[in-house]
Length: 333
Image 1 (spheres, rainbow, N blue to C red):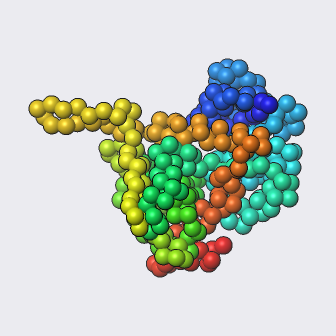
Image 2 (cartoon, rainbow, N blue to C red; image 1 turned 180 degrees about the vertical axis):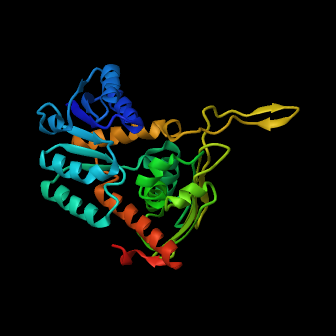
Protein backbone atom coordinates (compact mmCIF):
# COMPACT_ATOMS: atom_id res chain seq x y z
CA UNK A 1 0.00 0.00 0.00
CA UNK A 2 1.24 3.46 -0.89
CA UNK A 3 0.28 6.21 1.56
CA UNK A 4 -0.76 9.27 -0.42
CA UNK A 5 0.17 12.60 1.15
CA UNK A 6 -1.03 16.16 1.09
CA UNK A 7 1.40 18.81 2.37
CA UNK A 8 0.08 21.96 4.03
CA UNK A 9 2.78 24.61 4.14
CA UNK A 10 5.68 24.98 1.72
CA UNK A 11 8.14 26.87 3.94
CA UNK A 12 11.50 25.58 5.11
CA UNK A 13 10.14 22.72 7.24
CA UNK A 14 7.60 21.89 4.53
CA UNK A 15 10.49 21.45 2.12
CA UNK A 16 12.19 19.07 4.57
CA UNK A 17 9.08 16.90 4.84
CA UNK A 18 8.42 16.99 1.08
CA UNK A 19 11.90 15.57 0.54
CA UNK A 20 11.40 12.89 3.21
CA UNK A 21 8.02 11.80 1.83
CA UNK A 22 9.29 11.65 -1.75
CA UNK A 23 12.29 9.57 -0.71
CA UNK A 24 10.22 7.10 1.35
CA UNK A 25 9.17 3.70 0.08
CA UNK A 26 5.43 3.25 0.47
CA UNK A 27 4.63 6.97 0.22
CA UNK A 28 3.87 9.51 -2.47
CA UNK A 29 3.38 13.26 -2.36
CA UNK A 30 0.15 14.01 -4.21
CA UNK A 31 -0.49 17.69 -3.49
CA UNK A 32 0.88 20.75 -1.73
CA UNK A 33 -0.93 23.85 -0.48
CA UNK A 34 0.48 27.18 0.66
CA UNK A 35 -0.80 30.75 0.86
CA UNK A 36 2.32 31.75 -1.08
CA UNK A 37 1.72 30.34 -4.55
CA UNK A 38 5.38 30.44 -5.70
CA UNK A 39 6.47 28.38 -2.68
CA UNK A 40 3.87 25.71 -3.39
CA UNK A 41 4.75 25.67 -7.09
CA UNK A 42 8.45 25.20 -6.30
CA UNK A 43 7.73 22.03 -4.33
CA UNK A 44 5.23 20.81 -6.94
CA UNK A 45 7.76 21.29 -9.72
CA UNK A 46 10.54 19.60 -7.76
CA UNK A 47 8.57 16.51 -6.71
CA UNK A 48 5.99 16.18 -9.46
CA UNK A 49 2.91 16.76 -7.33
CA UNK A 50 -0.06 19.12 -7.75
CA UNK A 51 -0.74 22.50 -6.21
CA UNK A 52 -4.14 22.45 -4.51
CA UNK A 53 -5.97 24.49 -1.92
CA UNK A 54 -6.18 23.28 1.66
CA UNK A 55 -9.92 22.77 1.18
CA UNK A 56 -9.29 20.61 -1.88
CA UNK A 57 -6.79 18.48 0.03
CA UNK A 58 -9.31 18.08 2.84
CA UNK A 59 -11.97 16.80 0.43
CA UNK A 60 -9.62 14.76 -1.77
CA UNK A 61 -10.31 11.06 -2.25
CA UNK A 62 -6.77 10.45 -3.46
CA UNK A 63 -5.09 11.66 -0.25
CA UNK A 64 -4.79 9.43 2.83
CA UNK A 65 -2.59 11.53 5.09
CA UNK A 66 -1.49 15.13 5.63
CA UNK A 67 1.59 16.86 6.98
CA UNK A 68 0.76 20.17 8.64
CA UNK A 69 3.55 22.76 8.47
CA UNK A 70 1.40 25.89 8.64
CA UNK A 71 1.58 28.64 11.33
CA UNK A 72 0.94 27.42 14.87
CA UNK A 73 -2.39 29.22 15.27
CA UNK A 74 -3.85 27.07 12.46
CA UNK A 75 -2.72 23.67 13.76
CA UNK A 76 -5.59 22.72 16.07
CA UNK A 77 -8.32 23.69 13.59
CA UNK A 78 -6.61 21.77 10.80
CA UNK A 79 -6.07 18.69 12.97
CA UNK A 80 -9.75 18.62 13.87
CA UNK A 81 -10.85 19.08 10.26
CA UNK A 82 -8.64 16.33 8.90
CA UNK A 83 -9.45 14.00 11.79
CA UNK A 84 -13.15 14.33 10.93
CA UNK A 85 -12.28 13.73 7.28
CA UNK A 86 -10.67 10.40 8.21
CA UNK A 87 -7.13 11.26 7.20
CA UNK A 88 -3.97 10.43 9.15
CA UNK A 89 -2.25 13.55 10.48
CA UNK A 90 1.34 14.53 11.09
CA UNK A 91 1.58 17.99 12.66
CA UNK A 92 4.60 20.08 13.52
CA UNK A 93 4.85 21.14 17.16
CA UNK A 94 3.07 22.65 18.98
CA UNK A 95 -0.58 21.71 18.46
CA UNK A 96 -1.47 25.10 19.91
CA UNK A 97 -0.08 27.60 22.41
CA UNK A 98 -3.06 27.07 24.73
CA UNK A 99 -3.31 23.95 26.88
CA UNK A 100 -7.10 24.21 26.88
CA UNK A 101 -7.20 24.36 23.09
CA UNK A 102 -4.86 21.36 22.81
CA UNK A 103 -7.06 19.34 25.17
CA UNK A 104 -10.16 20.17 23.11
CA UNK A 105 -8.35 19.21 19.91
CA UNK A 106 -7.18 15.88 21.32
CA UNK A 107 -10.75 15.04 22.33
CA UNK A 108 -11.75 15.33 18.66
CA UNK A 109 -8.80 13.11 17.71
CA UNK A 110 -9.89 10.48 20.23
CA UNK A 111 -13.56 10.70 19.25
CA UNK A 112 -12.73 10.23 15.55
CA UNK A 113 -10.05 7.59 16.28
CA UNK A 114 -7.69 9.56 14.05
CA UNK A 115 -3.98 8.86 13.72
CA UNK A 116 -2.09 11.91 15.00
CA UNK A 117 1.67 12.24 15.33
CA UNK A 118 3.41 15.38 16.61
CA UNK A 119 6.72 16.50 15.13
CA UNK A 120 9.33 16.10 17.85
CA UNK A 121 12.01 15.03 15.41
CA UNK A 122 14.86 14.76 17.93
CA UNK A 123 13.49 11.46 19.23
CA UNK A 124 14.49 10.04 15.86
CA UNK A 125 18.07 11.30 15.81
CA UNK A 126 20.20 8.13 15.56
CA UNK A 127 22.65 9.34 18.22
CA UNK A 128 19.93 10.17 20.74
CA UNK A 129 18.13 6.93 19.91
CA UNK A 130 21.37 5.04 20.63
CA UNK A 131 21.49 6.60 24.11
CA UNK A 132 17.88 5.58 24.69
CA UNK A 133 18.75 2.05 23.52
CA UNK A 134 21.43 1.82 26.22
CA UNK A 135 18.85 2.86 28.80
CA UNK A 136 16.46 0.18 27.56
CA UNK A 137 19.19 -2.50 27.63
CA UNK A 138 19.94 -1.67 31.26
CA UNK A 139 23.54 -0.70 30.56
CA UNK A 140 23.24 2.49 32.59
CA UNK A 141 21.16 0.99 35.39
CA UNK A 142 18.42 3.21 36.79
CA UNK A 143 18.40 6.66 35.20
CA UNK A 144 19.21 9.30 37.81
CA UNK A 145 20.16 12.51 36.00
CA UNK A 146 19.84 13.85 32.45
CA UNK A 147 21.61 16.89 31.00
CA UNK A 148 20.39 18.48 27.75
CA UNK A 149 22.26 21.30 26.01
CA UNK A 150 20.50 22.99 23.09
CA UNK A 151 21.83 26.28 21.75
CA UNK A 152 21.09 27.91 18.42
CA UNK A 153 23.79 29.59 16.31
CA UNK A 154 21.71 32.77 16.29
CA UNK A 155 18.31 34.16 17.22
CA UNK A 156 15.46 34.15 14.69
CA UNK A 157 14.03 37.42 13.42
CA UNK A 158 11.90 39.56 15.71
CA UNK A 159 8.83 38.95 13.55
CA UNK A 160 9.17 35.25 14.34
CA UNK A 161 9.91 35.89 18.03
CA UNK A 162 6.69 37.90 18.31
CA UNK A 163 4.49 35.03 17.10
CA UNK A 164 6.48 32.03 18.40
CA UNK A 165 4.84 31.79 21.82
CA UNK A 166 8.17 32.42 23.54
CA UNK A 167 11.36 30.46 23.98
CA UNK A 168 9.84 27.81 26.29
CA UNK A 169 6.98 26.96 23.89
CA UNK A 170 9.08 27.31 20.75
CA UNK A 171 12.61 26.11 21.54
CA UNK A 172 12.73 24.43 24.94
CA UNK A 173 9.62 22.39 24.08
CA UNK A 174 11.88 20.06 22.05
CA UNK A 175 14.03 19.55 25.13
CA UNK A 176 11.01 18.99 27.36
CA UNK A 177 9.99 16.16 25.04
CA UNK A 178 13.54 14.79 24.99
CA UNK A 179 13.65 14.90 28.81
CA UNK A 180 10.48 12.80 29.03
CA UNK A 181 11.89 10.44 26.38
CA UNK A 182 15.09 9.87 28.37
CA UNK A 183 13.82 10.03 31.96
CA UNK A 184 11.12 7.44 31.33
CA UNK A 185 8.87 9.12 33.90
CA UNK A 186 6.55 12.08 33.93
CA UNK A 187 7.93 15.33 35.30
CA UNK A 188 6.23 16.51 38.49
CA UNK A 189 8.12 19.74 39.23
CA UNK A 190 9.67 22.51 37.13
CA UNK A 191 12.06 25.26 38.17
CA UNK A 192 13.19 27.75 35.53
CA UNK A 193 15.29 30.87 35.19
CA UNK A 194 15.37 33.17 32.16
CA UNK A 195 17.33 36.20 30.99
CA UNK A 196 17.96 38.41 27.98
CA UNK A 197 21.68 38.13 27.25
CA UNK A 198 21.76 37.95 23.45
CA UNK A 199 19.58 40.77 22.10
CA UNK A 200 17.74 43.46 24.13
CA UNK A 201 15.14 43.63 21.36
CA UNK A 202 14.05 40.09 22.25
CA UNK A 203 13.34 41.28 25.79
CA UNK A 204 11.39 44.26 24.46
CA UNK A 205 9.31 41.79 22.45
CA UNK A 206 8.40 40.07 25.73
CA UNK A 207 10.63 37.02 25.40
CA UNK A 208 13.91 35.65 26.78
CA UNK A 209 16.90 34.33 24.87
CA UNK A 210 18.80 32.44 27.59
CA UNK A 211 17.18 29.92 29.94
CA UNK A 212 18.05 27.17 32.39
CA UNK A 213 15.41 24.66 33.53
CA UNK A 214 15.49 21.95 36.17
CA UNK A 215 12.94 19.15 35.95
CA UNK A 216 12.19 16.59 38.65
CA UNK A 217 10.05 13.46 38.66
CA UNK A 218 8.08 12.06 41.58
CA UNK A 219 10.85 9.51 42.27
CA UNK A 220 13.55 12.20 42.30
CA UNK A 221 15.05 11.79 38.82
CA UNK A 222 16.32 15.13 37.51
CA UNK A 223 17.01 16.80 34.18
CA UNK A 224 18.90 20.05 33.55
CA UNK A 225 18.17 21.90 30.30
CA UNK A 226 20.39 24.71 29.00
CA UNK A 227 19.16 26.88 26.11
CA UNK A 228 20.61 29.90 24.38
CA UNK A 229 19.71 31.76 21.20
CA UNK A 230 23.44 32.34 20.58
CA UNK A 231 26.24 29.83 20.05
CA UNK A 232 29.03 31.45 18.06
CA UNK A 233 30.62 28.05 17.42
CA UNK A 234 27.62 26.40 15.71
CA UNK A 235 24.45 24.43 16.44
CA UNK A 236 25.09 22.96 19.90
CA UNK A 237 23.11 19.77 20.55
CA UNK A 238 24.29 17.43 23.32
CA UNK A 239 22.75 15.03 25.83
CA UNK A 240 24.09 13.02 28.76
CA UNK A 241 22.27 10.39 30.79
CA UNK A 242 23.76 9.38 34.14
CA UNK A 243 22.52 6.19 35.77
CA UNK A 244 23.27 3.93 38.70
CA UNK A 245 25.63 1.76 36.62
CA UNK A 246 27.12 4.25 34.17
CA UNK A 247 26.54 7.12 31.78
CA UNK A 248 25.96 7.65 28.07
CA UNK A 249 26.66 10.78 26.07
CA UNK A 250 25.71 11.98 22.59
CA UNK A 251 28.14 14.67 21.49
CA UNK A 252 27.81 17.39 18.88
CA UNK A 253 27.75 16.34 15.25
CA UNK A 254 29.73 17.85 12.39
CA UNK A 255 29.26 17.62 8.61
CA UNK A 256 32.53 15.66 8.58
CA UNK A 257 33.55 13.69 11.65
CA UNK A 258 37.30 13.97 11.22
CA UNK A 259 40.23 15.28 13.21
CA UNK A 260 43.33 16.87 11.66
CA UNK A 261 46.70 16.85 13.42
CA UNK A 262 49.41 19.37 12.54
CA UNK A 263 52.11 21.43 14.24
CA UNK A 264 49.31 23.79 15.27
CA UNK A 265 47.62 21.01 17.24
CA UNK A 266 44.50 18.95 16.74
CA UNK A 267 41.53 20.50 14.93
CA UNK A 268 38.08 19.35 13.90
CA UNK A 269 35.57 20.81 11.41
CA UNK A 270 32.96 23.24 12.75
CA UNK A 271 29.56 22.06 13.94
CA UNK A 272 26.46 22.04 11.79
CA UNK A 273 25.05 25.56 11.68
CA UNK A 274 21.35 24.80 11.14
CA UNK A 275 18.75 22.35 12.41
CA UNK A 276 17.84 21.24 8.88
CA UNK A 277 21.33 19.83 8.30
CA UNK A 278 21.95 18.59 11.85
CA UNK A 279 18.73 16.57 11.93
CA UNK A 280 18.47 15.36 8.31
CA UNK A 281 18.44 11.70 9.34
CA UNK A 282 15.96 12.38 12.14
CA UNK A 283 13.45 14.01 9.81
CA UNK A 284 13.62 11.07 7.41
CA UNK A 285 13.18 8.53 10.23
CA UNK A 286 10.34 10.57 11.69
CA UNK A 287 8.33 10.47 8.46
CA UNK A 288 9.11 6.76 8.05
CA UNK A 289 7.71 6.14 11.54
CA UNK A 290 4.56 8.09 10.70
CA UNK A 291 4.08 6.16 7.46
CA UNK A 292 4.32 2.89 9.41
CA UNK A 293 1.84 4.07 12.04
CA UNK A 294 -0.64 5.43 9.48
CA UNK A 295 -0.39 2.13 7.59
CA UNK A 296 -1.19 0.15 10.74
CA UNK A 297 2.34 -1.24 11.03
CA UNK A 298 3.60 0.73 14.00
CA UNK A 299 2.79 2.79 17.06
CA UNK A 300 2.11 6.52 16.90
CA UNK A 301 4.91 8.24 18.79
CA UNK A 302 5.23 11.07 19.69
CA UNK A 303 1.48 11.29 20.09
CA UNK A 304 -0.87 14.20 20.69
CA UNK A 305 -0.64 13.43 24.39
CA UNK A 306 3.15 13.78 24.18
CA UNK A 307 2.60 17.19 22.61
CA UNK A 308 0.28 18.16 25.46
CA UNK A 309 2.78 17.01 28.08
CA UNK A 310 5.64 19.01 26.56
CA UNK A 311 3.48 22.14 26.32
CA UNK A 312 2.46 21.72 29.97
CA UNK A 313 6.14 21.75 30.95
CA UNK A 314 6.59 24.95 28.95
CA UNK A 315 3.66 26.52 30.80
CA UNK A 316 5.10 25.43 34.14
CA UNK A 317 8.48 26.95 33.19
CA UNK A 318 6.82 30.25 32.29
CA UNK A 319 4.98 30.26 35.61
CA UNK A 320 8.19 29.43 37.45
CA UNK A 321 10.01 32.41 35.89
CA UNK A 322 7.09 34.77 36.49
CA UNK A 323 6.65 33.78 40.14
CA UNK A 324 10.23 32.95 41.08
CA UNK A 325 9.47 29.49 42.45
CA UNK A 326 9.27 25.82 41.56
CA UNK A 327 5.97 24.88 39.96
CA UNK A 328 4.18 21.53 40.17
CA UNK A 329 2.96 20.35 36.78
CA UNK A 330 -0.41 19.66 38.41
CA UNK A 331 -0.81 23.44 38.76
CA UNK A 332 -0.98 23.98 35.01
CA UNK A 333 -2.67 20.82 33.74
